[in-house]
Image (cartoon, rainbow, N blue to C red; front, side, top):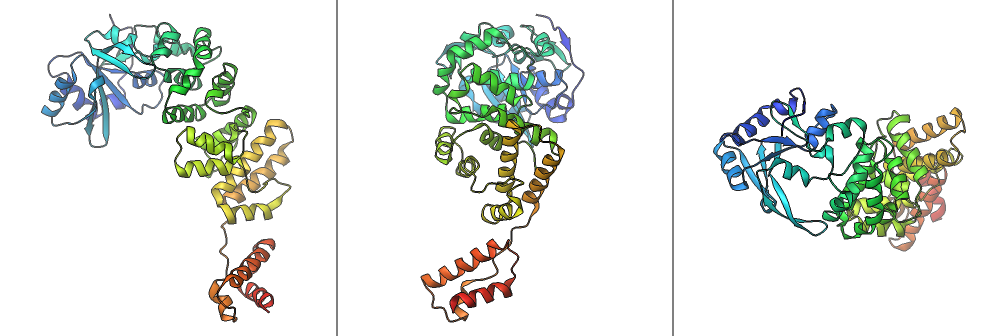
Length: 421
């Protein structure tokens, strides 16, 4: 087929590393093109993160061509026709054109081909089936350019068949819609997602987590969560009940309303905003999503705040939260509480928002104090090392904390002396 569009040369296309890889791959005259996301994002004038390349040559030939040009090759997925070329920090995923012989809902058995349309037909969405040459000529076998311009996320071929080939595509549909889509969503795609939603259980926790985090960080995260809820997809990722209203307010706060260096979109915090559960429920979800230990502990803390941080509670409660749990956790608790209030009472006025903003700045910037006494201070007063010494120090610390951490070392020593008798 003939090219149907064109893009101007992009920095990532003309970079020396890209030129070197393309020169090596085309040394024997092969028709080599950029494919997928880099073409899609270049059309939209969005930043391109990953450069993927397709070629009709089999992996052995690709490897030989690259190595002959002095380019490092990593066999990242030979069985599926993929190798990775490395030049310094630049990385290029190069895949041989292929078609599916058999699929099991996640993995495919493939055969290599030299047919570009056959390769495009196995891709998920029409605008991900785009390919383009080094000169910028775009090949568009399934009208992906029109869909991209209209904000339509449309499966290549029959949606149900595409999802049954790989159930991860179900979540990828919502991720693409959250990033590139405009209402109304494709009805046929939504129907297929609704019917096949239970198939999400077949996916690994890591895959579900990665897609869900990308959805949560997308510009239209809350609207997409509504779609996922209405199609009974969300319940297979995040256990009900959920709080989409709080998620909506969280995305507004962390991406639009607040201009603070300490606040930026955060997938785990947005997930906590969506959840309506306790620490145990958060732990179960963390296990399902295969979160790291640190992420799991953070999610549990966000799901069950140890302190109620509101303008009414004042700075004393906030200082205690920072002292016990750190600035980041206290900041997140303030954001979650603020988003929760906005979700049910969005019109409390500018003065209320100013109070929340002041609380947030304090949470992020107040330096946690260090308790000025140690065991040696009690021992110097004649207290015998043991349980009583620890109890006395804890009692002084509690007194110091109740006074909003204002007592200095001298005052704390006097309090210790009084308690020690």
